Image 1 (spheres, helix red, strand yellow):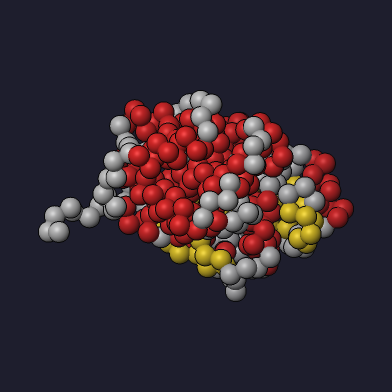
Image 2 (image 1 turned 120 degrees about the vertical axis):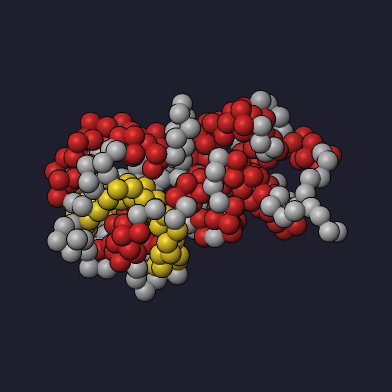
Length: 340
């Protein structure tokens, strides 16, 4: 199917550009849709995306376009790499063109008012579409620079998973399949919050033991939350869970880590986001996650602590003090605490 049609990538940011290049390198014709005509023109003139992925040449098979209806009509397989705040707004007006299409969400975020994940928004907009999720430890620049990378495509639709694997598999990019779309997508969204904490800790010179403790307790916390919502805990031992958490919490290339680092250096939240110049999904996710955890009565001390720092005027030292003085719970929640 993908041989007869070009493949669409929606979103002119860093990951959308890296993904479009990957598809082009695999021999696929790509329509790379972006809202901004000036950005599309700049890519056509310079052969690279100067704003989001400077220095990376855009593959000749990738065509920057700005006509969304025409793009959707021409393509069967569509990767959605729009910011969470823009996804519904961009696609709702063209909903009828999405019927029967394969829509793959790559956005790691949660809609504020509804607590819907991106694939659930796609389902809401286009109930007749076939929907999947691509998630994993996939820093855009490294993907674009051909660092060896693996990702997960998740859907109950096995044929969709196979088509995505066929389109994206290459010498430097492997795609594994999962049937737990909800767990894979939730892992991608939740880890952004913990990357902010890790960035703050790094800026304040905290040690490797501390970093390890934060990442491991973050994994326990996000798994606990996801299982409460019906995800499979084993999904979080894979690329979309612990894999994505490790890279996002330990790399200065991660946008959420960069925001956290700026906060740890003493910048305010608005200044930190402005310095980044791109969307850091973790800030949006934190607001909705804190409220949802309280509603579901899920114990998430790191989420509560970061929320207290960003929105309630607390310091990182105060929050860490409270975390260290709390009662230690079980190390791994899904092992029966018997037979010691």
